[in-house]
Image 1 (cartoon, rainbow, N blue to C red):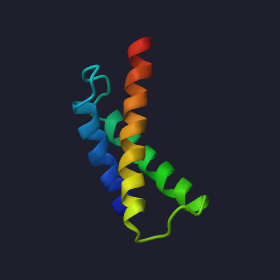
Image 2 (cartoon, rainbow, N blue to C red):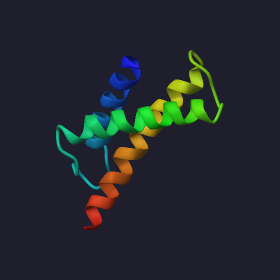
Image 3 (cartoon, rainbow, N blue to C red):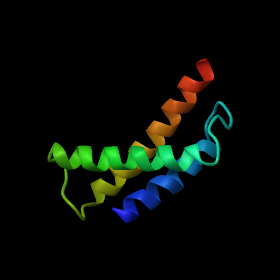
Length: 80
């Protein structure tokens, strides 16, 4: 779980820096959203029996979930 949180936080920061709309998320929000997206993707995939612990697809889902949540948040915030 700690690895998932750490990867999510790092991917969240990277996604906030590379977001096409510019830097829409702050220093605290990006790792928090990244970690939340990583946890949601990891545990959601496990609940749907898409993968088990230790499979490579779990890490791919973690990275994708973190970057998607930060990206969607940046798009929603840009429209306000």
